[in-house]
Image (cartoon, rainbow, N blue to C red; front, side):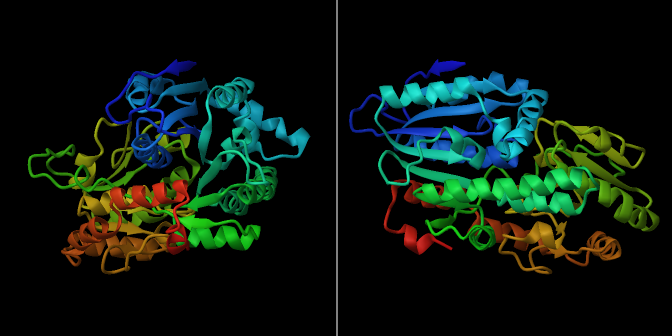
Amino acid sequence: MILQAASSSLQPREARDVPDLLLLCHRIPYPPDKGDKIRSYRWLMALAQQYRVHLGAFVDDASDWAHLEQLRCLCAEICLRPLPPLRARLRGLSALFTGGPLTVACYRDHHMAAWVDGLAARRHLSHVVVFSSAMAQYAPLRRDGRGPRCVLDFVDVDADKWAQFARRSRWPMAWLYARESRTLLSHDSRVAQASAASLFVSAPETALFKELSGVETPLTAVPNGVDVTYFAPCSARPSPFADDATAIVFTGAMDYWANIDAVRWFAAAVWPLLRERHPHLRFYVVGARPSRQVRALACDDIVVSGRVPDVRPYLQHAAAVVAPMRIARGIQNKLLEGMAMARPVVTTSMGLQGLDAVPGRHLLVADEPMAMADGISAILHGAYGDLGVRARGLVCDQYDWPAAMARFLAVVAGDKAIAELSA
């Protein structure tokens, strides 16, 4: 589907001095209801202030087609292509015969390629922003420096994430994940080398990619933010829990493997220890599209909510927010949101990486079941009364979106300040 967008007060798109920019996203950047879409939507908002934005993206959730009007207010032209999960998997398997990464093959689409070619013929594109390296296959990357300035936002080092999956899986999936890690790293190294600049969500991600790839082009850390006005405690916000319930909450997209692994481990290893000490405790798994494995966890004391209209009541009225991540890269938005809501947050070392928070001051960190159960029990007994307040203070000071968006725009523009921002 190709759409010409309506005019918007956000951007004088027909003014001749407004440069044309192509934004390529592996997933439609609206609604901002999961980690990557929160980031890509913020980038779109920032770009629309300074560029005539042309958006190419895929839609993997049929309900997202209802949000076209929000995008039309920000973009001059939009090309959206449907990508049902089954079709994506079938496309990905073709890479087994070509030697490339499955991730890239999942997003191969001749209609998208034709639209990008046609757009480049109609418009003088001054900039291209690629969100997720799988979309780099559509970008006019040129090693000679000619053509538009191309900036690639990897967000995380996905090749390492696949390696983590491989270490936690059995054959044949372990082999498949290890293959994806190798081929994706090769692909990502090549497209990063051909880009003017590459972005990652944190300094550790930037350093890891540089170590694994040996890429010498500019690599810059631009962290995620959180809307601290939206994610803020409110005394008028009612609790979604029963009056006698003490709730422990996990939030996230529940069809994502790392989240599935986290809640299954917590339910099996940590939850029995907590229930033994606190019989009235309830564990709420809050997030859209819960997988079969997640739905199977539901019982009297574990609630799988599915999609909710507003996650803030669940966070605000939780006794503690948990993020027991065992597979992770980058910054966990679920941590930022829980901390912004001034709640005590408990995570693992994997969940903490990339976040400039001090364990014991801003949140608790535990990797073993007993240690995590002990930490949550201590919170329930009031041992960390100011933990949530300090957490919100940290987020307000260091993780606001305006600062991240300004840094992102500086990288896109090629501002000399990039050198000062690089990790």
